[in-house]
Image 1 (cartoon, helix red, strand yellow):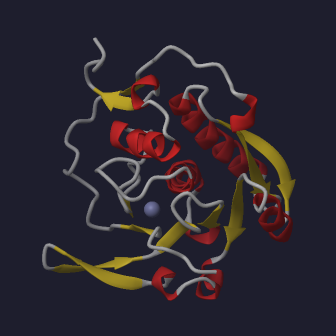
Image 2: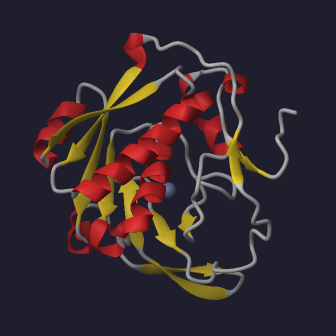
Length: 214
Ligand SMILES: [Zn+2]
């Protein structure tokens, strides 16, 4: 399977300082748009995930549902094995599959450990998760590289990809994970809104500091 450049990686250098503001996160609250039943997208989860991971995945789905505000609804579907999920998403939907780091070479050489140069320094990068493509159907989590607390933010990021966002901005859809993917920021929401041709001023997004709508 061909993987596009939707891998994300851990950026060891980014541990302090880049986002100096540490205020609480809030979401805007737009008027809710009722559900169009045709716009429900099932999310099939690998039955190899444990109960705690299932909760984390459901929480990531809930945040996107809040952002999508009823225009699209992600709905937790059956728990299946990888083959069943792959055959299900042919007809639409999203699959979340658990893999090991040793499995990465079955996918794409770009997902293997490598180095990138940032400000003249070589930085090692490791794939923690990836999606099949922007606007795709499959999310893979490299579970043996993730702490329990990483599952939710990484699923949120990969959901952004399969829902239509490329890497963008400095929030959820930045390619380098530093433990700071907390919520769906405006530029990430806008990518998905444009992909689905949803009016972006009707969707929600998170912010820090003062409410941007007041
Ligand atoms: Zn990514």
